[in-house]
Image (cartoon, rainbow, N blue to C red; front, side, top):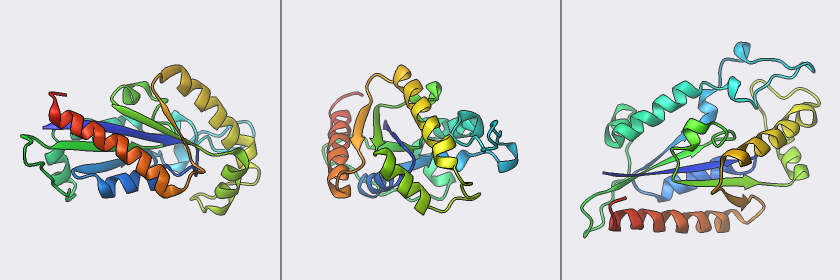
Amino acid sequence: MKRLIIGIGGITNGGKSTLAKSLHEHIPNSCIVAQDAFFKDDSLVAVDSNGFKQYDDLDALRMDRMMSEIRAWQRNPESFFASRGLKPQFHKIPEAQDEVYVLIIEGFLIFNYRPLNELMNKRYFLTIPYDVCKKRRCLRVYTPPDPPGYFDGYVWPMFLKNQKEMEEIVTDLVYLDGMRVREDLFSAVYEEVTLEIQRRLDTNC
């Protein structure tokens, strides 16, 4: 049983979830672990000096639980699927003696958490311009909703801070232009991933 872990990170509203879901739909034996599923309860999230909830910080996330999920997948992908009621689309290439199971990890701070970053085999990071990001963020409804001034007073500065810290950790990050046509963006990443899957089938990786 062979494994491949792909990281899909990026700026808020940059297209991470869309790309991750598209890959999952087209890659057999794949599943997604999304970082957004591991936010702490709102009452446990710290508030900064401006009164803004500090959601864009690793301290706002239960990274221990996220790592437990990923470790469970690493130990046995088949059992991971079964225990969560997932139904992967199994696919075996005739001449291959094994399947490749693919875990897609999606989130805005996945590369900033070193223990998680070190597990990944391929890393992609989506970017979009400030004005596009702000427009998309303002059109999206969050629970709890963003307070006035939250994007410019907290979200964007934290993105720049987190990106700088991420770049000090990651050396083989592939940047993706989130302004590209969605289908073209997916095709480019899908081609790379399928080549990596085939490489693992052909070798002992």
